[in-house]
Image (cartoon, rainbow, N blue to C red; front, side, top):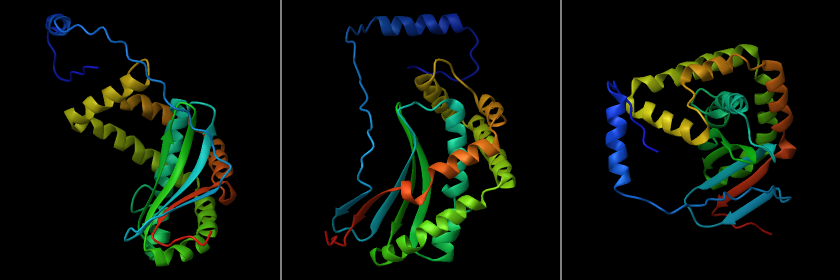
Length: 231
């Protein structure tokens, strides 16, 4: 993929020049890429024993299984990730960093694949604090989910809209955006398209989905820890 951003006057001349460059280097190789699918494991806890100076904890929830998320689904999944834990003003940071002082840092992220969507909470922690972290996590996380309301939802949509428009502040960022859109979709959707899409997200429906998926009993736990597990 070649992406060109700028004030282009004569497009046909540019295309002809690029065509001459590429046709002098023929490539008859047809690459085939089959991405691996992700199958949920029945094992809910995975502990890796090593000797790092600090422990890394990753909590995973399956948002969608056996389906590729739509653009609208990606937008609202990212929206709730931003609300829950994607900056120092988030619920996760305020509770587990500021209130309890248990973690060095903590954030959330959504991963979208061709056959599923995953929600992750990732933190780095002093190993001696991890028992306390797990002791309070479930109850505090339920409190976080129940604290999300329409006012917070609208505030985050506004923030996300403004963040999207910042793509225009940099030619490099705009180029990256166009590349990403071209790879993932049949056409290029610009920031304004995502702003329009965000307006179609229903709070009650999206919140009900998130509340049903992000429950304590549905989480998978992955730990890289210097503390050797007993079994």
